[in-house]
Image (tube, rainbow, N blue to C red; front, side):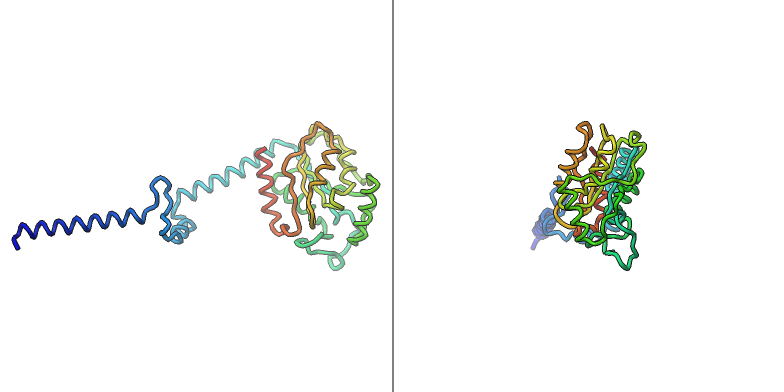
Length: 263
């Protein structure tokens, strides 16, 4: 075989190798305009790299967005004078020791102060500040669930306004009211309506929150809207912590507050 033929064959083999390499790279690369890995690419290593900080650009961006959201939430609420008024069964019944009470706050109504609703009120205060005001009925409610439900049902049927032990003397100084309560007989306790009617909430911004075992908060929202002055603004959505979701109540409360801050 002449040297010329040998050189030509060598060049052809080299070209075939280069073409094959190019096809292999093209098949294993993700679309250039998306930056996504191809379907046949193992993404587990890339994800681990992200966790370890290898993709520093993405980590920084996510961190900035999280910090910006927290800052915006604080800035929005810092411009308001906040009152967190709440009715808690735990604080509206006769004091008792933990041994005698239903203390499983994650699965049922808790009679250990501050109770489930009071716990949410404290989470709100931790996140946005404000002053706590427990709504207290002059006549304590029974610590037995069935007896309490019976009394609550009688008050609802009579459209009663239970007497309270105190009031907010400087309600005019607040421009935003967080109002919390449990769900009794598919609505708020009547003592909550007493609170509303005893305080001038004209032009206030009101955010509702609730803890409940089952059902929902829709009826309570309607009843409260029918009681407050027309000039008041009730923010949506209201926040409801059901029995099944209470284990995540802190994260859910913070997410709700972040959503309100954007309104």
